[in-house]
Amino acid sequence: MQICQEPLVIPGDVYEKREIPSDVALVTPLVVRVIEKLVEKGFLSEAQRMKTQLCLDEAVTNGVIHGNDSDFSKLVTVSLFEDEKSWGIVVSDEGDGFSLRDLSEEPSSMADDGLWNENGRGLPLLALYMDEVTYYDGGSSLLMRQYFKS
Image 1: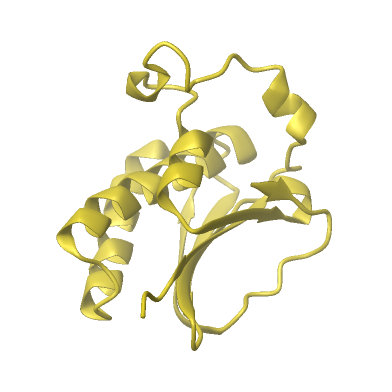
Image 2 (image 1 turned 30 degrees about the horizontal axis):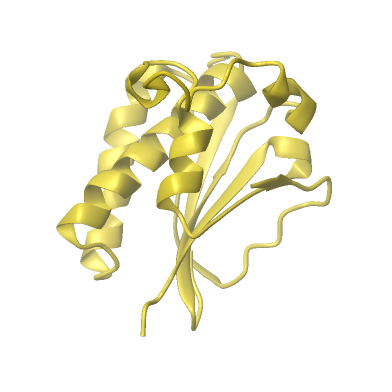
């Protein structure tokens, strides 16, 4: 995982884009619709569906809570893209982003069964389940990508 200061350029064609105000009650309906689109495109097996749904839920929830401070006037945007070698999801919020130093000050969620905790498990899960995880715009845009297996 890396955090880049430069603006995000989506690597491929965006075929779906959705936005929600920053309210955690709106996260699950958005995640369900986005996962349905990925299934329709044939990108997800059943095992991948559950993992991707978990990653997307964590990413959108982080955008709502940490990125936008649950400010209903701020939006979280989810875009789906594909290119010749991969498909991916971009989650963007209107926050100021974060730094790797901010993360190093948090206790590790990978230790002591941390993946079972309700908080602090998002970034380790993304790194575990996605082929690529890169933050842009100083941390306010997340690109998650899966490469097609040949």
